[in-house]
Amino acid sequence: MYINMPTAEQKSSFNQCCSTSNGKSENNPDGVPMEVFDGIREQTLNNRNQFYFDLTFPFYGYNREGANVKDGVQRNWWRQGMMGGIVAHYEGIKAFSETDFTEDLKAVDIPVLVLHGEDDQIVPIENSAIKSAKLLKNGKLITYPGFPHGMPTTEHKTINKDLLEFIEA
Image (cartoon, rainbow, N blue to C red; front, side, top):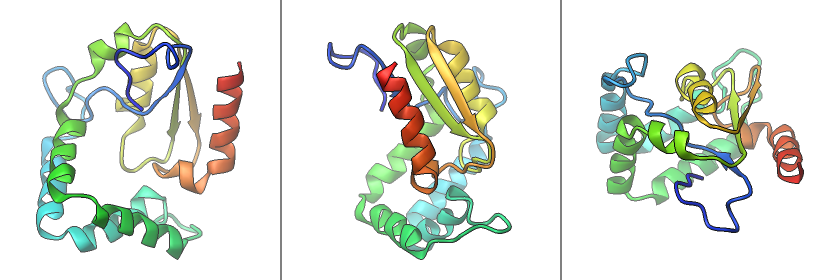
């Protein structure tokens, strides 16, 4: 969830799922090179069917030794991806690679929980969660050793426990 101007109901606290820009730029010199995002755009346009399936391996950490690959999770991810509009997906790549949320994050003054897997192969932790938590006035960062980007699916019991504790605090 991304909230810039939260409603009264949202204002008490929220979970943060955006970050500073992931792409390399003048304001983010340590970001992921734009060539990586160009490759994602190219695959989205020209090889979407296979790309969405292949992406499940790093997304869920299924390419790691000893991973418990769940066919149903992969198929569901692929199904969701194929149901989305290709234009929305293409423009979404631009949004998450080029939009800089730095000033927005600095302006948030309510408690924010930032969760990130330390084995996230999709969004580098140093360039997202760690930076975001530092920018937030009242951010709480929890990192999880060995957890992948898809940790809300693969590690839902741990994530849900931490979310509930944060909401009830």
